[in-house]
Length: 378
Ligand SMILES: *[C@@H]1O[C@H](CO)[C@@H](O)[C@H](O)[C@H]1NC(C)=O
Ligand SMILES: *[C@@H]1O[C@H](CO)[C@@H](O)[C@H](O)[C@H]1NC(C)=O
Ligand SMILES: *[C@@H]1O[C@H](CO)[C@@H](O)[C@H](O)[C@H]1NC(C)=O
Ligand SMILES: *[C@@H]1O[C@H](CO)[C@@H](O)[C@H](O)[C@H]1NC(C)=O
Ligand SMILES: *[C@@H]1O[C@H](CO)[C@@H](O)[C@H](O)[C@H]1NC(C)=O
Ligand SMILES: *[C@@H]1O[C@H](CO)[C@@H](O)[C@H](O)[C@H]1NC(C)=O
Ligand SMILES: *[C@@H]1O[C@H](CO)[C@@H](O)[C@H](O)[C@H]1NC(C)=O
Image 1 (cartoon, rainbow, N blue to C red):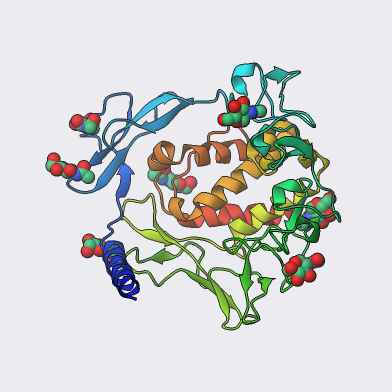
Image 2 (image 1 turned 90 degrees about the horizontal axis):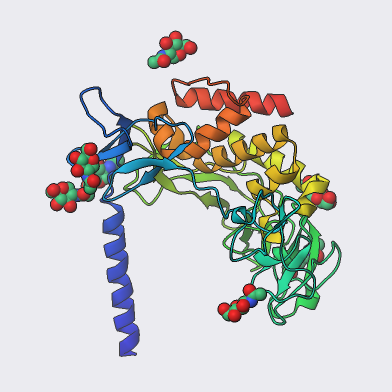
């Protein structure tokens, strides 16, 4: 009894402490280096502690990345590309293949463990196999309509597992990816996400069953500004099918802008997310997805290995744009060049490779670009 009270008090104290911590955040500001600031040629960003501002400049060598070095400063250095490929992905030599999960490079593709061979992780199995973790051997992925899965990665690459009972795989069936309808019952809704739901999100209803949600969006402009000190903002539009009506509790995070503004995350109904979902569907329906390691089915490195340059450039761009959308609103290009180089590069590739259309960034321009993209692919 006493322990319960102490626990409750502790939990309350923790809550107070957390909420006061949340209320004290001040976003760091990001802007271009001024002409009076002298940077070491290899410095790409430095934090002015007194004004809580990062001053940035692009690296002189376009192939360099901008890395955090000692303290809070960032420095230019060569991009790290060795050891990044998994079984089924491209390589020039064994150095390109991940040392933990592959057994070298053969005919330009990293080699994994074959059927029946030992494994500790599905990452190390050849494409079309997963690591069965009670036997620790690679087994063929479970086909659509067949039972026996415990998670999505045990199903073929364009399918996912409807987990009805986590202790009884014979009750769980593999269904095509994103094939359930809005408000269909779904099993295995983990952290509010299911790969069977059309818009990824699922939610428990008052009957304690889980259902796929409707398409939810930002109520106002996507990535609208939010108060980083408040814990009560960034809700999506709501779905009245659920009791009480369900809306996604989005996150508010600091952006890469000179005002220190924070922005809300975007939701499946927002244009940049829609563009990404459309490209994911296209990839899922292509024959190439079956050539990836099960854990890498939607990874840009595998997509790049097999899809046309045009399609894979679009895939990489929509993916990074979707994941960074709230951060990059209103960013100056020098800041993007230092802190969002993967976005800048994906965008340049997507817009036609070496065509160096340097943007004088405004959020509106980003939105226009995603609209153009949507028009182009619809
Ligand atoms: C959040 O709180 C900090 C500390 O009280 C304050 O400096 C900052 O301006 C606040 N930010 C906003 C957006 O209100
Ligand atoms: C800012 O500078 C002060 C004094 O040099 C130092 O004590 C403090 O730790 C610094 N803060 C950060 C975030 O670097
Ligand atoms: C960061 O860069 C500034 C400007 O170049 C320099 O004065 C400062 O000593 C650097 N701080 C660290 C921790 O390297
Ligand atoms: C699996 O892990 C064990 C223990 O870490 C290790 O000895 C073994 O070599 C690993 N097997 C494979 C196939 O990676
Ligand atoms: C998926 O699992 C849920 C929860 O067990 C179940 O209600 C639903 O009928 C299943 N869907 C299909 C298509 O089997
Ligand atoms: C994903 O691929 C499977 C197999 O080709 C297909 O049945 C399913 O409809 C696809 N899902 C989407 C959303 O395109
Ligand atoms: C921004 O773009 C406009 C229109 O392309 C151009 O006239 C202007 O000079 C640009 N501004 C900067 C700072 O590059």
